[in-house]
Image (cartoon, rainbow, N blue to C red; front, side):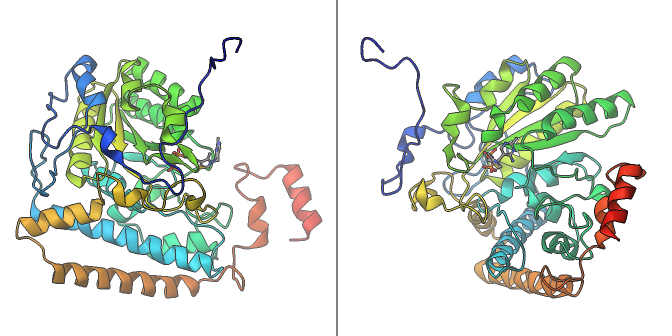
Length: 409
Ligand SMILES: Cc1ncc(C[n+]2csc(CCOP(=O)(O)OP(=O)(O)O)c2C)c(N)n1
């Protein structure tokens, strides 16, 4: 630093607590403006899509442009219902964690469309490799809520037998791959799974989700390399919710224009879409799924969204970002936007919406009561103690048997 100039750069968040956030500088491509190439297009034809923004719902909540997936009102209402349930479930689980009824929780507030719309655009047989913030997939695929809660309570009906932190769901029957706490491992796994499907001549594809922060992991790059080389039928979703705990997305993105743009360097079709626009997420996923099924390879989708709440129950975002940031976020709230779209079409109204919220709240309350009948965190029953020695290997070896004897169970 002989001349007083720094020769390296540490990105800082655009706003700190107390600042007035203003996202005017974002210069987002308007809904309906992005071109929609054929799903069999070359990756080069997606270059503008990787730096633009695929959007369908405009500022009047009308569906516009070539990406409009033209979904029926029934499908739109189903999507709305899954998103409302996801949000109500999250709210309730947060409260229960605060009451000490479960050890930990992570909400997906503001990101419900990313999970729900994608799950609805895929086939139920497609394998999903989610991160811990895609619980909406489970609702869209119809998982039993009591089972989800029993896992979070870690009680006797937890299908993970109390071995995992809450929200690390696994559901083989629903083609929902076991969530791992180690960030990013699911990208190469999804690519490998997709390659196996292709190798066996199956129509099934894979889809995976990671956060913006996780793209800094080596596994992000390993997954993209594998998929590019072998044209694996996989969809890589980067959920850019602006934050990785307290690190702004510019730490992982660096000077790259967008996360989607990183896919181009691997020769992958790459698209940035409005993650708070149910129709845009649905349409982009549908495009990428069609491409994968046609044998044209993987797609990197960046879903541009905002993490509206804390990272987890162990986090306090007021320490590192302004309280008003989500209110100023220009892409709004995914539930509100789909709701207004349906109202605009004459297919929904405030009374029906209030009733839906009531029904979902009643379902969540009832499910929690039932879940507690299978045991509470403090009073049990929990999984049997000896189960901690099971499933380490397919068959317990002598060390595990010895340890179990030592514990006397
Ligand atoms: C390999 C690894 N490093 C660090 C962590 C700790 N950790 C858990 S979540 C998280 C932030 C992830 O942020 P992002 O990928 O943006 O996803 P988001 O939480 O915003 O959905 C970190 C650093 C971890 N679980 N695994």
